[in-house]
Image (cartoon, rainbow, N blue to C red; front, side, top):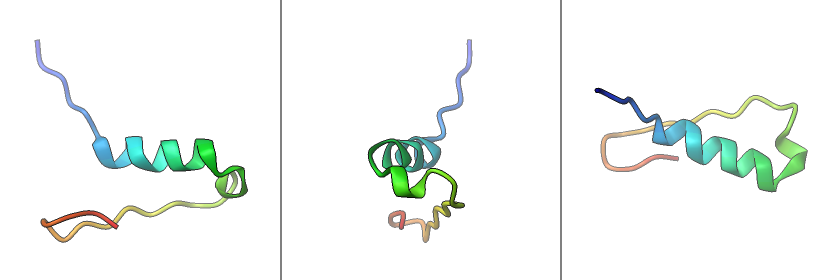
Length: 37
């Protein structure tokens, strides 16, 4: 069994959950191989 976990999407979804002002706005996750913004 294999699973693919998209951690970047998880963090963006959590941020949207705790910040309702972002609910209807696009959220972008950027990475430079050292970390994510």
